[in-house]
Length: 141
Image 1 (tube, rainbow, N blue to C red):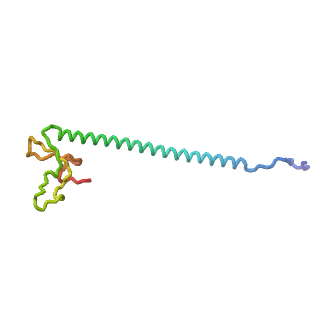
Image 2: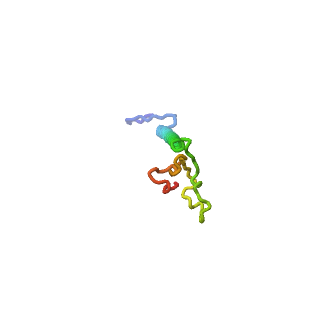
Image 3: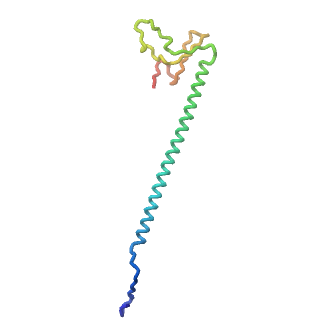
């Protein structure tokens, strides 16, 4: 029942008052959206890392194939004709020499190519490394 002289009548309702429901609902929706966004960002980061790894793996495989083909070409260039002989560097070791030791050979496991038609010519060494430096001063790395 309204009060006499009151500008706003008082309305009584039998329904319960639900204050703050829209605030709780909007905060819940925002939290769910934040979880979805974080999940998507995580998936994108993982997928981009996988793609980067796949590119790096492909690049490494291609570089290995190029290195293999270059080594094969070098082998064919040095040891191609039938007038050449290949052997390890320790074949030149004089094991009967006094004070001889395996450490006296600078690079005993290198493979050399000797020309049989020119025996005085030094061997060509089939090693990877810098070709601008003599074979004896290259280091194993």
